[in-house]
Length: 210
Image 1 (cartoon, one colour):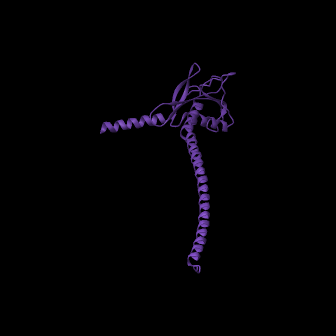
Image 2: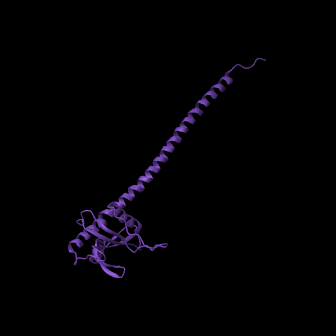
Image 3: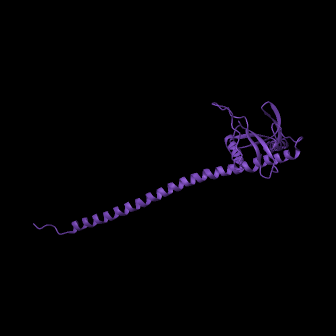
């Protein structure tokens, strides 16, 4: 029993640790740079779209892949000279997001690496820019625990609203059909009464004389 309890606690601790933003490194081009890492149980495409929407809201578009005819997709979502609200103290940074789906049983999990520079190739770290690095961790945690959840809720609201509106249209159509059926049944009921009355008069009328 004690072994089972200990194992459960260790599994829970590992799960909580993986859910948090952690410090690591990521390969950008050929350089292994300081970065932050997090996991979110949402589809990769949803995460990418949410990140793009976040920066679009502050008027920063992602960098586009270069190429004349065939454009090779960038390994990172890159947003240059972006001022992230008040979280980053108004600093203009270049943000690099590496977003990938991780295959596993059950729910879909997306891994996210986040690195940032103050200038060309000058990637920040806890050693070089301690204050900016600390703010970057706060920003990453906000994305993980709040903004991505907002996106999830908004998607659910959109999906349910779409279904609700579809059901509402079906209900109106059914109600219209009910009204048509009521009118048709009333008309047929009146016709039946008229015919029954005619039949009664015919049956009770005097027989022809011989």
